Length: 249
Image (cartoon, rainbow, N blue to C red; front, side, top):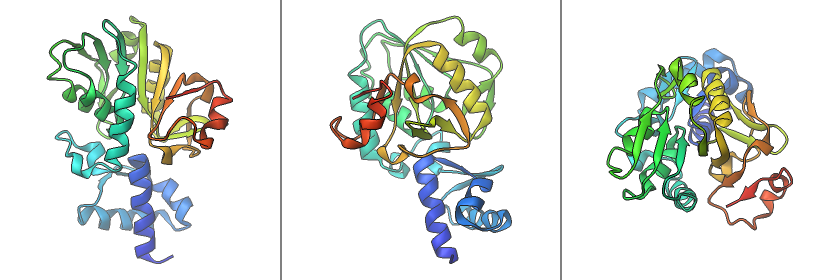
């Protein structure tokens, strides 16, 4: 495989999943990890990605300032956010994870809607700063520099103290047989705790991530109450997910 082809596939994976591991790319591209590291270094040098320990992340996923022009599939994610907002009602207690789709959801929450919003994500919390009617609670603990979320420490005790109406989460991989999957061990442990803290789980994801699988399992597919994508609910791709008892929004 030519270097140009490898770079295109690497960018495709990063755009789709926001973050990638060098070991996974090595297997998918059938090249050594040294080759992958050189490719990632070159892409980072050209300003296309951000290289982190063990892999790389998209610039929009990692950015605090959050430049929407750099967000992959921004129009689809904004449509997903609009759908998710329709679930909100006055007085709800909700939990929001991190990621670019969840950021769009946070940005789309009406600023005059009275909610109690919990999040372990620094970047999600920043989008909620101007919501004057909402009480925003940033869950604390050790901050993952890659995920920009509190992943260790008090966050787990704090999650045990409240029962959320909804947990709004992005997805890295989602398959009807393999369930929710990710490639970050600490984020997976946090996601499991957040799932336990909510009455309903709303998964927000562009359709490209459906039927993809990452190395670490988060939860079975049936744990998800609602799946929200940019597609219409009648799309035939949803049939296997509906068989797992998931409502499509």
